Length: 384
Ligand code: HSE
Image (cartoon, rainbow, N blue to C red; front, side):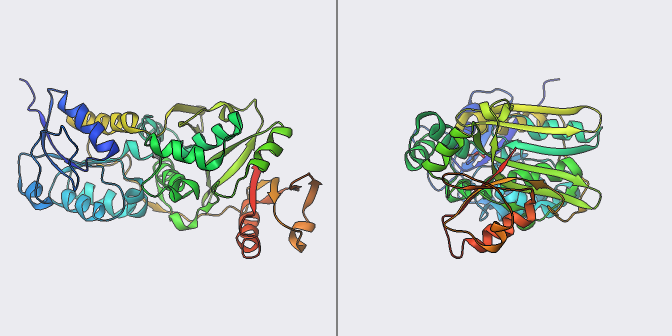
């Protein structure tokens, strides 16, 4: 017997939403029952819902796709849809990272699917690979490049010496950046992806606010020139590892030797790796941002649900605290003077910065937070 087509309500018709719209309209096994959006782009022919209640009351709609982004009203919409017994597919990392335990539990209680593969890694089947691996194998680490916008900016600055602002504008034009690009630049976006990935990998729930986070908003052309002289490539890296008690998790610019695979990642691409106890390191590469890659993963989640997938990627929700004191690295630091702490950790003085001796992630991030009170433009990056 032929399966009934999946009936979808699409919340949001922005960059990703319109991509999902196009994909679904081209399929025979899915129907777009309606869309709900403040702005309806030209060419959209499906019915437009007046409000969410209309969607929740429609028993023929089995799946709600949320691509509005932001916390509100996405949170209210997604939780109401789960409570109403609808499957939910979302690309919203802000929402999932902030309400992880609650939404995963709601999906389980209501016997529906909650999927968010596009929320981390754009078009890469990263979360589904994590899910499959974590079900069989202890995962020890997660790390990599998980933000397309910042990779695009750093890659452009390294290759062409272009300015930070021009590269950011181009990333925005190409639809890579968040609604508020500050979230890309200050590391908030990549932090959310690390939180979701780590939670699934280790079966835990970590608090976003505990993840030490440094973005690339303070990097300058002079820093990039110094890295070239050092024969290093700067990348924004997310990393976590399972500890006996808790998790180490942090975001920071990192200076990679050209031989490391991360150094070669161009444009909006991501490279994300997991390390399993028996399988070792596995890496996943692809476009981490943009309309069609992201919409593709949203669509793939819908296909998985149509094929019977339910719940979330894991239902293990152990509380875990973040502790970065055991992770030690050397750092490049550029600031407008010396202080006592820095003086006691100098390994090498360069033209425009210093290299520290090995210090913990906790210590360095705390020092930089304090240092910014007198030098707001201070920048640092770890040496790999
Ligand atoms: N702003 C995000 C990025 C979009 O640049 O990676 C994809 O999550």
